[in-house]
Image (cartoon, rainbow, N blue to C red; front, side):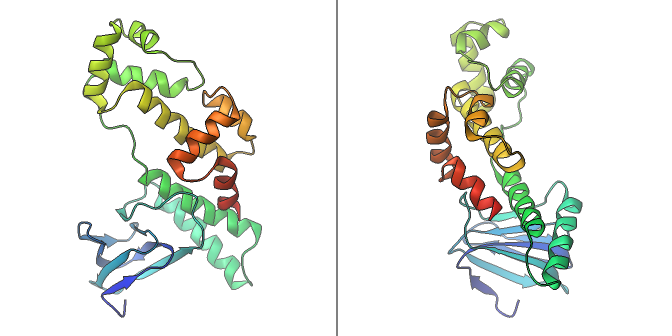
Length: 231
């Protein structure tokens, strides 16, 4: 923190393990980071910061990232898990560098933060539409149609689309794609399933359609996404 502003060349994640500092990524809002907070900086971004008291930080720099980082500050839901991963990484580094185990811990930190940073479905004040969303989320492999969803809610297709879009700010089809791809990203990271099997579990007819859709959303095909997290 010798300088109030720094331009990062690669994706950098700052995890605060103690103390407090004010920060802002590019033109985003200024916030105060404290223990348990993470600051995400995409490649080429400017980070403005000032220590408010002595700070202890974990600084993670990534050469390659399968998904563009959305800059900003967030408070991870399970900082204890991330801190445990970081302690394992630190211990391995002191013994002479990264082993496959430390690489796994690093991937876990990266994916956990990006998963929380990814946009989720907005809160819903319509119980019937919340139930419809849960139906989609719990049955991603089903071949859903608007008439089938509408019938499950006891509504006409037109009324269902209108209420669903009002509740979530998106169409049923668009939100279903988002749910399927987030589940695909989770399975690519946390399982050894083939891309074809992941595609099937996420409701895609074949691996080709899944890969094309995944690449549009995440900027990399499924195999490259998985490989980047494991290397």
